[in-house]
Amino acid sequence: MKKLLLILLLSPLLLFAQSNVTLQVLGSGGPESGDKRASSGYIIWIDGKSKILIDFGGGASLRFEEAGARIQDLEVILLTHLHVDHTADLPALLKSSFFTRASGDLHVYGPDKNVFMPSTKSFVNRLFADGKGAWQYLGDHLDGRATLQLKAHNISKNLKAKVIYRKGDISIKAVSVHHGPIPAIAYRIEIGKKSITFSGDMNGDYHTLEKLAKYTNILVVHNAIPKGSKGVAAKLHMTPYTIGQIAKISGTKMLVLSHRMLRTLGKEKETKSEIRKYYKGNIKFADDKSRYKL
Image (cartoon, rainbow, N blue to C red):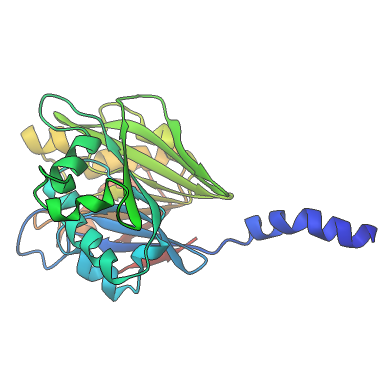
């Protein structure tokens, strides 16, 4: 009897430790045409289910389908910022839910507003709210009538990471990052003792990512500009030099380079050489539908 009681007490811990976690890249490109890639999008698979979606730019909806992901399995959508190449396919995703058994609350997190961008709540309302949204016929997903309800949340500017979501063995932390004048968020998703951190678009000026990503299993960064970039590009994005420094300080086990644009495609050797000046760990260049198991 005592042995049975011990097994029952320990079984949640055993399940907790055995979560099968995989990162899949949906879109590895940026906002331009010609790179033959979908724009930014990522799935975190947990025990074979597509649980967490990070960004959903143009083309990501097709990749979502090709990957075998299901909207009814999603629990959270994390938007790093509200640029088109990170959000464009959200209406397609929501509409597709009509043809499934998706139900309950689907939480959408993203940055708060500033003078240049709306808040995430306002963004979702402008897309779907009944009577005023661009796709107002989907407003029932906001007002309680549809079986699947979007619940939007704003993340205020914060240079110290904070927990924004916790359910079971999933915990999500968020911190502001510098993407020029655009409000932007980096996320760390922890599933048990495993973690994946997403930089989103940023240039490193706030020095928040290296702290958020401390000893993370996988750090996903955006390789949107090549070595030596200056001006506006460097105010918005990390150079390989900065990526290498952040990866070294964070001590990440694997570095995944995504958001690959025409100006960086074909320069992988140069980029890797710059990063290797600081970071000696595992470096991967992402493609659409690439998978990385933790």
